[in-house]
Length: 328
Image (cartoon, rainbow, N blue to C red):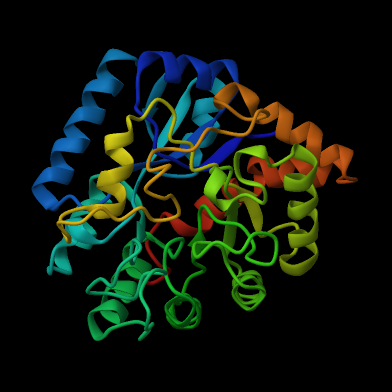
């Protein structure tokens, strides 16, 4: 049986969801623990997860290395890998990259949707690329073994991160812009550069990233994956659902607005539909990954290719990415 890994989720975590992970046979999940939180607030999120690990040791445990995915399979549990969707928690202190890596952070986006101290987000009018601090932080992330994630970054910033990073980067949750032209989705130029550099793309099931939104069909989604495999190679793609299960609409407001504005920013939503959009009928929670596997087979992917997309590629990438750089 092949490994099953989700490249990103931001659910309202509970015993119910942890049990659904086990029902769905999910071996590992990259979990967002922070958006706009500062360092101390991020530590509070880690404390919250420590209580989850303490309360549900038969269901979940914290993952630090790729070997923990194997451990999860062998013990019938799900390994949880921490990530951040913004660099807010390192504040203006490059030393916090290593501190957070030691606490288990394995992914960090250089931006959310806005300009950060490191790079430019995809909602900004002008993309100025990696900043001076951005280059320094990427070097430090490369050194300690923290993955550079450009899921919410602008085109120039993403291409510069791919070029400047000495280790392959990831776009953990996005889709091709040629399939659905959302600001968050990625151009073929980015996808080709990502694949050629050894990076990873996780396909998102979040409706704002889907052709047809909540009405997107399984066939359309899986055909898109197959076409992207032709662009990037079948070894460079995986799933990154961006599942926000059971979250209240106040959370999507925090994701979009943070502390930077007094106005409401609706992002890909609108004033008439400000909250989380309904999920497509074929994917509601962690028990539905088998539906995606079946859809990939139906569009002509081989069993070996499906196994790589559903987790094998992430497993390899974790092994390449989470440890210190060779000689570092």
